[in-house]
Structures are given as structure tokens and as C-alpha cells.
Image 1: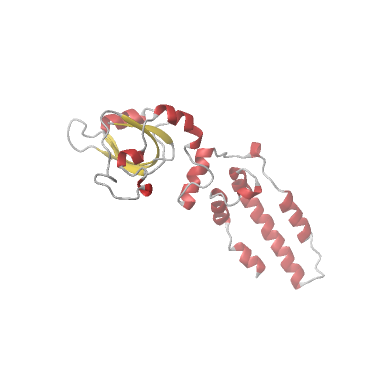
Image 2: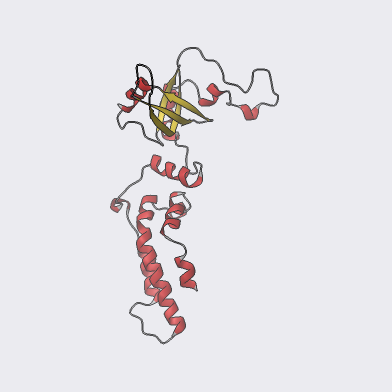
Length: 219
């Protein structure tokens, strides 16, 4: 029964817990822990099998005793230099969102704080009228709606997702454009990148990637 109960916790379950940050208490690199999962599952299954054999036949002669397998489990580790597929902070945070729906260990904007302060002059919340909405004690006329900012404004946002489609009419017919969801420090919004703009964005180093932090300019 013990062996069967253990097998029900599979590879994807453990990987999900690791990528969500639930195993950070062990102080190991998440990518290293993910790489360790298959071997640890094999060793753990062997441990339960050997224990089960001794429960059935206490006098059984085993090539590998449960205590020996447990020692291997405790000693097994993948060092950071041996990780086959390393994960940087952005990748770790993106996985957290995929598995939990939120950022747990750190804000994805934290590594770029100085740049964001220099290159931006507003937030998504400022543009949509949601900034500080929770702190408003009274509903005042005109509050809670999109604010009007003449000229060009810049804010930091993560490209949560985008849907690329082809323009059907006009001078840009046949060219790709995109509908995007942008997540900022205090809210999110939908945005459209028309054909010319989308074409320029795709020329950026690395193109446009989901989960990346960008400085967005709007008019």
C-alpha cells in the first residue's frame, strides 16, 4: 500500500511543485531540482519496493537494503554547473504564473527598477484610471475611468499573451498585426499593434516573447 500511494505522486506533480516554488525551502536551483526528479523517483520506488519485500519476508536477502537506498537519495544532487537547461529569473517567474496564477518569489519588474524609473512616466493604472482605485474612500465625479494624457506616454509591462492575425483590408492588407494583453505593476490592459508597428516590434532582438518585460509607448 505504501508503494502504491507513493507512485500516485508522479513526475509532473513534483515538477509542478518545484516550478511553483514550493520546494525552494531546500535551497536548490529549481532547474536542478527538476532535473533530479526522474532519478529520485527511481530511487524512491526502489526504497519502497525493498521495504515491502522485508515486510512480506523479514528474512529476505536483498542486494540493496532500504537504508542503502535512502542514503543514495539523501546524497543525490545535481550541481548548478551540471544543469542541462538552466532557468533565469524571468523564466522562473513565468513558470510561477503558469502554475499558480501569480508571482510569488519576486516581482518580474524588480530587476529593471532603475531602467523603468528612467524610461517610463506612467503606469497602466494611470492610463486606465485604476491606479489607487482601492484607496478611494468616496466615488467622485469622473473618478475610476481612463485618464486623458495628451502626447506620448511610456509604461512598463509584461507581454502576457498576443494573438497575431492578418489585416484583411486597406493598404496593409495581408500584413500581420497583433492583439496583445499587457500586465503592468498595477493592472493590465488590452492593446493593438497595427501592421507597421507590429512589423517593427518583430525586428527587435529576440522578437516579441510572452513573459518578457517591455517599455511600451502609447499615444
